[in-house]
Image (cartoon, rainbow, N blue to C red; front, side, top):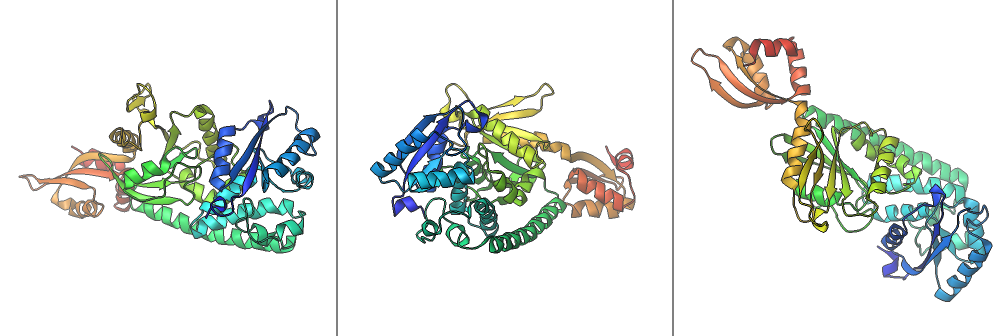
Length: 431
């Protein structure tokens, strides 16, 4: 439930233009974040500031201008498109006489609204509590209000009433529960691996169309919308890829510029779906003017979760919004797919994407024809048990000619139990 739909929480947005890397944020994305959180944008203020100040981040003269704007607009809070230190946040609240929220708090609030599963809610609460722990010295009279508000949802207003000791106890409890969830996820992942299914994970900047593509490929009804962080809770489905067979496809939380480290840590169990995948589909908004920067931000997060060495296929989405660009596959010098241009919304190029996926993952699969004598009936039966036999022909000499399609891992395991090396198997039986 968005606060703006009921109470009309009015916000003044403050964006700093400067040369410092930590101040480089996208003002349009900032406004989208605020609206996603449920704010009614009363005013958008851009401040030229190349050297942030320790006390307010911005100059004292601009603080006074903001104070007057808060009064004239009847604003409930001021949101900064940058990270504020706890002392800067306190100083600004005193000077402006209203609540102040930074970019991290804004993203955390959106996550608090969107998380639906038990695991997702725990992860968001952990990130919020660790963020709040540095801000416990705020005014109790201000934070004792129970009606909520942007930046105060989730555990905010209740946990800030607690002392640091109780907060630490709650953090330990959540981490313990998340560890159990993480172990369960690892068991489920191992089960999928034993089921002989390659794993694919959708990653990308927020609002690039991951959930739309996920629904298209899996015929699911995962929530998809043209808004930032529409998907928080990971979803894994089984899907059939032509010329390849069954795979598991995971839809994950979208990344964003300067994604708070606390969120990366809190969602680590979820993001491990990407780190342990056989293939990453990196969804990219092909028509975004910030495309290159968004690609780099995704690479940064993948590196942080140690998934940057996983094989990747770039999926340039929304080609229907580009002029003179048709769905197609781009290949490297060896002829392997590296990039596919599609439109998930218009369902264009999906066959090309499936073709590229099959080409990249077929290296994990043996496709071979073997001839087995009646003495190898035990091995023949086990190949059938693996669902590895696509076709069988009985020859006149009593042998069976089998056309196999089987994951390398599964065949290697079967042959190991039978005391046969892979090299000997192909040398003796392959046609």
